[in-house]
Image (cartoon, rainbow, N blue to C red):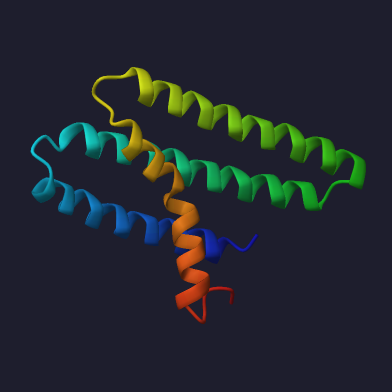
Length: 123
């Protein structure tokens, strides 16, 4: 995967996250759990995206059998991390669960939005 794309996505997620956090201060009576949940989910989403980038870059240099096993293990590892994040968000009183889900989906939303609206995204 191209490091420029990873940087673009990370930068866009950070900018949109700051906007969402700023809007949350005005929309909600008690914004702290929502903001904490969103930040928690967004950070884990960015880290998962970077882990995916590292996995792809390493798997390309491996033989097909090793690459399949390596990719499968890292695929399961990422989903285990997402499960732990969602479990913590569901059990912690100081984190908002729906906001954590939105944060986890933020990278996906940015990638889809960038593919639709940004003509130079894939370059």
